[in-house]
Length: 193
Picture 1 (cartoon, rainbow, N blue to C red):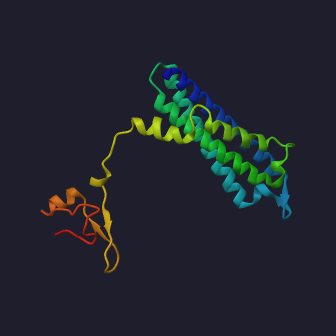
Picture 2 (picture 1 turned 90 degrees about the vertical axis):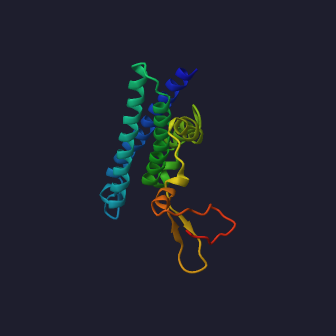
């Protein structure tokens, strides 16, 4: 069963990359021909930045997908890689399709151009082979090491007098030969004794 899910997720990731690439290709073509304020909209900095961000995201999604596919082809367990590729590629497909609609403006909503279909396809890819939310919680976080954040970061203490003070981590408190009040505590304004 796991093998079938891996293949399915890699397939959905590849479709997500394809949708994002098609949205980018149509957007760049449209931006080079559509004029606003006497120049093609491609020459406006906001559109250049949007298009540059699209291509960076697409390339990253493509590399994640290819990496997951290579691992699957070599027989190595790739459920984490397939889940990450599917999650990222479908999210990028959604972002690129939305950016393509923004570049095209009002005409993007008509069925004359394929941009509206890219948007629908991207939304569908997000829920195929497991929703993006379930990908993040089950596939990705299930394989990562657990970290006890209570011991690794400083926590603010609210004080009635002035700005919040920082409570040292347990390691820092041991170095100072002191102990830390429990957080949250009955006495909310406690500090290091």
